[in-house]
Image (cartoon, rainbow, N blue to C red; front, side, top):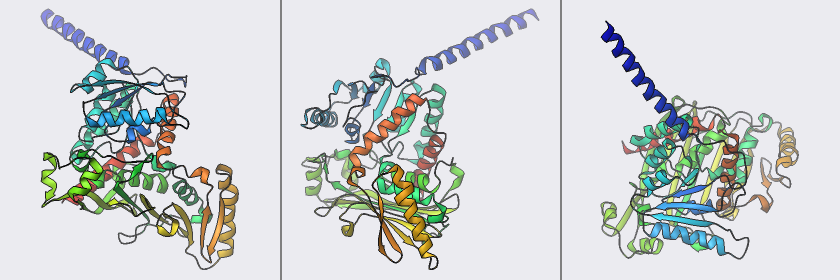
Length: 468
């Protein structure tokens, strides 16, 4: 009996020691609270293979230390990233003053975790291992600001769910860069949809005529910060970049959630995939060379080559129901935009009183423009008065200078001052500034994490349906 008692005590002590050790590790991984003090946020940039990584540093932030630690494999990606930062530092107008401390080597990730000179990791690049990098970073007690997408395959989705759970346990913030929430016409579409006297109620819609639709057209060749973009060859490998249905679609699904159910906490059970499809954009060797500055296709792209055409699964469409409301996302990648044009966005929210529409076509000079289209036949005078009050008085408090313009008996638009049309690149600073506020606050809004999980569940389940 005495031997059993001694054995029980010994086992209890061992288990207790292990538990203490586990708690100690969690405590060590938890970051000290941010206060908003100057330079208390120290950035680490991981494997910056996408120009979005540099756009986070297009401007300076008082809360962010000017020394940034870069960990990456050797190669063109990191060199191009450093050139972009140098361009920001040496530009004539409002130059930045970043100092990049660079480590390159095959063990770059392990080196970052071992040294941990910073407290926030920024990642924007090759997506093949991004979910693993995110998970292992939050396990090490590192805050993460990640470019989309954070996951590109259904198989890796559980890892992302785990990452959010670990981040909460370790007291760090995991957040993705949703720039499109800061586009002014999208903001106005959301705000007007929240006014019952103007919008009425969001319709349920059908699979053929969804209540809310978001369509986006992008281009492989374009200009960024005034220079022709150079894309890495792996950008055209969907095993590394991700298919269009799980890449840019992330923004569209995010906006649908953000606009249709503002600040509501969503769950995976709220999502039902109705249908999905995917298709390729075909590129000639000359097109590929122009955008990558490479003479030939790398060997790993061979599986996508038919004849001499590179076939990239960059396009996708998902029709789904969110809390019973039909929604549709569509992403198209063309090679190059017509002269004077660029990436475009189309969106419609169907209400019981009016439709809120964003167009960005030739008629709009390829600039996002919001339209309010009444769907009622009676009471139009009352509707117009309510719309005028909503735009010219209520929303003008938040955005001084905006005003309603009448285009027809049942059609209006919003005249938006140029100061609000800051462009895609400036939105990265806006997202970063919001993230810095969250760090100081010590948490994200309660709906952000569950809705990020739902967003990536929607894109990965959409991809699964498109592959069937």
